[in-house]
Length: 190
Image (tube, rainbow, N blue to C red):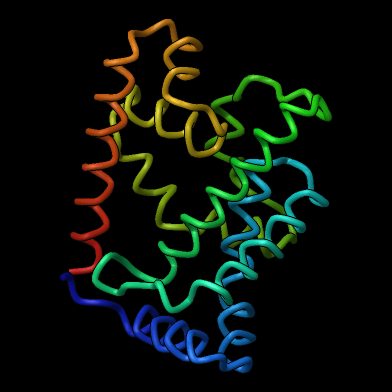
């Protein structure tokens, strides 16, 4: 396992305390990580009210599932982000199924984000995220497939249809891109 940063170690300690029912640890974890999760959720859903609802669900899941956190599998931040992404995509798909919203095709300029995001601390935290920097280091086709899945909530089959590419090509691009991201994050932790 790569060496963890002091911040990740502190967050892992908080998650361990949350697993034992420590409400103060939960409050501290929420205060320090909610803006990161909210930024991602908001980017996927593009609706503040729905994003706030999903954020609440994500932290309820953190409270319930803290005992399942395994520091050998990643940082608490990555664990949280994965839950936020999954919940946001589930919500987006649910909204699509019910016909409550029309989701426009993903605009690459929106996926990368503008240069400045105003005074919203959640969006500012998102801009500073390591994930965006790592995504920008990927080759274009790999980055595009991962962004469509991660930010657009599309399945691999939907991505293949949108891009007019074979499903196997999309799967390979995503696998290679995710492997490269994993290597970038491991190198960054070292």
